[in-house]
Length: 92
Image (cartoon, rainbow, N blue to C red; front, side, top):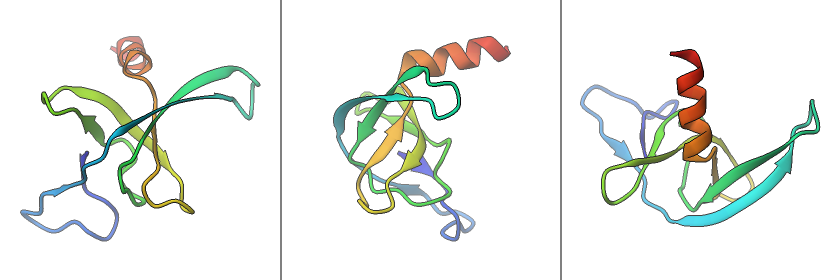
């Protein structure tokens, strides 16, 4: 993961975290009750990293951080890469 978390950025800073793909979680939307897939990574993240890419060891973007667990410091959630591609395609 590469990003500029709140309170940690300064000129020339290169902030990154390493972690592993853990699996998926099927959740339901709080507003519409529709099911959606979240991918889980063991990346230590803090506020401000939402929207930052998750990159695999081949240099490919495999997800994007959208939330973290504040009670577990190494749990990070991402939409699936397919969902991310669909979102991007829908606005272009």
